[in-house]
Image (tube, chains in turn orange, green):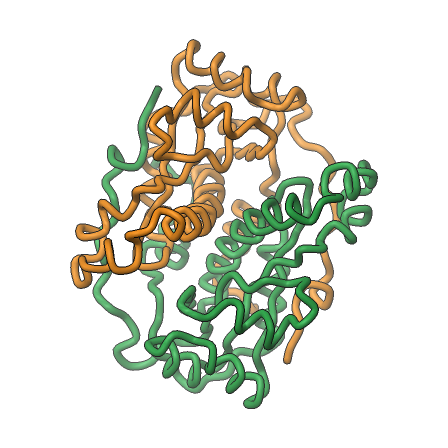
Length: 197
Length: 197
């Protein structure tokens, strides 16, 4: 047993979890999303910057505005998933830093005064959090359908008009429907991804 | 019970898991790293591009070369952790795409022909995988100490001389030692991170 995590949890989160392309009609509630958030918010980010923001696309009108910016192949599932969320980075995450890092509030300006620094650090750390979020969706017993095939500039203008947030991923969430899964593709062998020096 | 994942696993991966700043001498074996990799390799990436590479810094000579490029505050723990790894993105991940995405081998050039596209997509997807990797370290019952405080250009020149790989994170791995943990900082409330539209 090289892993401490029990095999059922390994299956739930990684081994049997799969990207879903169809979903049932069963709703995904705000309570479920809050349970996911309240688990994965603990995942680490640099300086606890916590730059990920989640926009739940709940209204039919907002859904239509989002779907218009999705790549063609992503439109049907994004139209019909019980819940679709936009994961974005808040470029001005530093405004909350004095609260999030009370032992070093001066880092708000000393490290993150420049927007270019915030955009680079924020995008990386929000991507880490997006990884945690996908794991969290699975921890809720739901299937995730993460997508990067969309017009990010279009989504940003449509949903984040002030330029402060930038979309990183759109993710469908729900119970898998009929024929939800494509065959799993191979992964790189250990020795092709990991080396020792 | 809003989550399907059992509470002990929630604690192991997120609620009780903490970034460690000191470690015991207990070695981290290649078998443990392989078990971590063989779990988290299943985490999704766009087009299954799987761009994350892991460089285990095993030799004292390599460790010294790495420590020289770490931020001052990260040097003592990076010098003494039982295992330190460099997580990087392989900008030429597309070379493996025909193998990783056998149903659409043409995407290697059609989507990823340009280096700028690969660098952007690869860095985002490798960051997702870095998130999975941190979860995987914790799944092995080990503590992770992820760091972005290092001179990335220096590390890249030192370890990835051909320019093909770019360091995203350095991570210490091991069993937590004395006074390993700082007090946990607050996280954003649900309503500050998640909105509905």
